[in-house]
Length: 192
Image 1 (cartoon, helix red, strand yellow):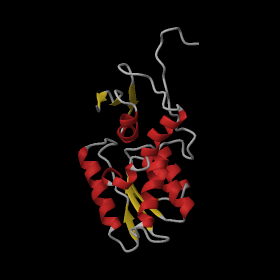
Image 2 (cartoon, rainbow, N blue to C red):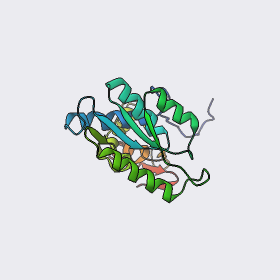
Image 3 (cartoon, rainbow, N blue to C red):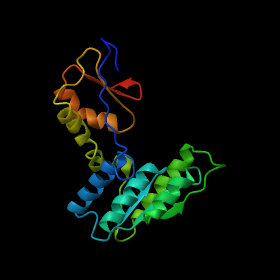
């Protein structure tokens, strides 16, 4: 299938996760760490602001673990994501957008609203972008790639660990030390 001399491509497919997203890993890690440390009490409510994908994964994990979840969302985002979160039992607090536009003001209002909701008794704020526990959910990706390839990643100088968003840097935390000379490219920018 591949011509002689072509590069080897290794791909980690995450669509087989329960919601079809690698965010399931992040959501589970964040919730389980909060439970273990007592920040999220039994039957405590999880709070998060989201454009949808993280909210879907958090709502799924909450449904499986018996935690209510309150999601701060907006009409600027996908109605399909809203319905999916609601199907998993999420309560939605809407922050109206300016004509369906996503801008800094909308995001700041969503963050502020989630923070206010999280101050209620029995509520825990996941705060995905500032939650170190959430990133722990991505670390096993690198280890799994290393194990599933028996440590045979493409050799430097042409190798890289491509990805986008949080997953590439977190995955590379494991892979870069193991695959000396490799680099991680996150949204087109080299990490190493």
